[in-house]
Length: 98
Image 1 (cartoon, rainbow, N blue to C red):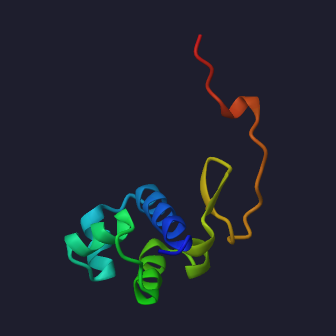
Image 2 (cartoon, rainbow, N blue to C red):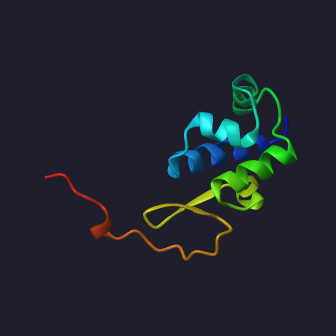
């Protein structure tokens, strides 16, 4: 198994959660049965190029984003290739417990 698959899986799962998509919704978008989907997630088998393309389309990102991973920027996840400016975290962005 190549080193790219864990990045694709982590990125896909982070984006799925971020956009509020359920696992069954992503499975349907990918055209995969649950067993096949979870086999890919565990890393037992590699994602196909077609599955990565369908995932990118369903999640609203480029294929490159799934291969490159995510950078944390601003208040949430921003695709590393989005061109969005990354701003520094300010003290006012963080709630402090009294």
